[in-house]
Length: 329
Image 1 (tube, one colour):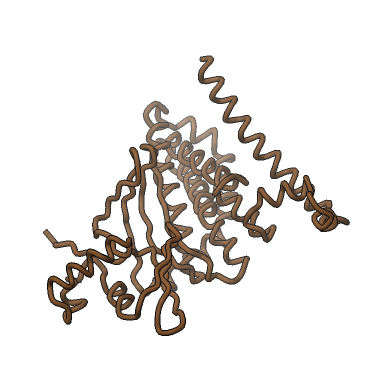
Image 2 (tube, rainbow, N blue to C red):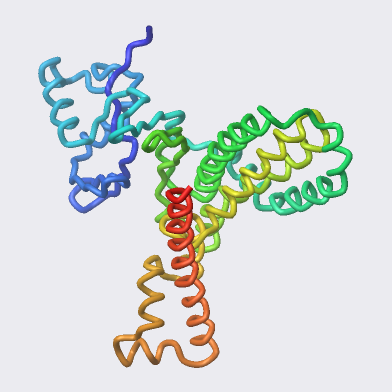
């Protein structure tokens, strides 16, 4: 069995400060540390595969153990294990931690394909599915277990490729991608990517990073619709998988919380605190905020703000309605 060694916290971003020191920031916890150049060099070479004695041979074994223990206590070093418990009934399984050199060309190619072909594949697959629906359904096997199989397949593929597409777009545009993997949150399956896109300067590129996951779900929806009519015996399975990915795409486009739709809309509006901006537009508390929404642009901003607020209210009402129906039944 291959021995595992300590590795540096892969969510750290280093930036030079004056006097030859570095500022290390954990993009997940937002903690910061001021480190000297030798410590940063040690952390960058500590990859979980190389023995610490090779990374820092000038230290004695005792000094090295104490140094590693100190860094681990600070949160700068993590165990090389891929499975991490995040809380009650919640785990994170790391699939990929990028090296210092990202596969930029491959990521750019995948991102370009998603951007250019997502809608054509979705629309084309939908039209072919509609035109061949009757014949394919007539030749389909009994839908019993195929519905469940399609749901599981569609959900697994949709979640995985959704996050993988975010990672590909981030790498293509120079974002700092730290980790990609699978997770269970309160026993609900999912996928995740840890990424920092602050150094992506262009707004349109950040929007594409946020939209890439939805584009991946659109592509999967179109492909599953094509497979549903191409393989009539599995019509129900691929139809269910297409429905599942279509739902994931629409859900993630919702202007809610930390979903992709909220991030895209916030980027277009030029303000990350979208809900706060909406309330300030609709309920101004100063002469400055009243004057900032006059004219045609002001009317458009108010209309968009009303739409966002109504969406939030409708979403909450739908959840309450579903819970009420469930309890009544």
